[in-house]
Image (cartoon, rainbow, N blue to C red; front, side, top):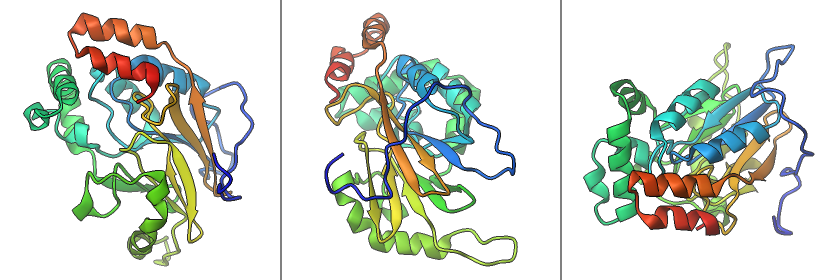
Length: 267
């Protein structure tokens, strides 16, 4: 990250993964694994979960399916490890892939997902909320823009400061505690752009953990993040995975060649 990285965004030391969820003695959520834009890329998801250090929970900012060959397997794995998942645009349109007719890769990936997913899997995708809260109600989780009227709008890391008024609005709608009090929120986690980044905006942390399954920031390694909820710090992480395995499966399933080609370049 560049020199404008705020002090509260820190790179934590890596260490071997012992478990997806760590046991927190007092029950507080401390560290949370952040996933987004898995896009049916099982080798990338497996690599991320293997690399992830112990965390109290995992949340997913949407787009579990689409583009790549393993929608059912990735859906099952995300359901297994994630305590909160919101819907992405591909999750929302998996049953109507023709809506992406202008984008061959997207349409083909959704058609494949529609064929591969069980009725239970489709029902689960339909049940996902547009947005939710985690970290004791201190962090908001959404796939794209936090304003509902701007759903599917891209917000790149360089545009995070423009979210200031939307963060104020989220704070007004934040959950109350058991005594009915409402505190300010600590941050926002979103995806959709497939570009990893984090920034402090008016003292609140905005994070895009990047794309697990189809990075578009010039780095082909799978992206994710680990958030320390109490410290307000985030570790933006990358891990290499077997792209050749994905390319072979893309060819085997008859998906567009470019679906695999872009993975080698992180675009």
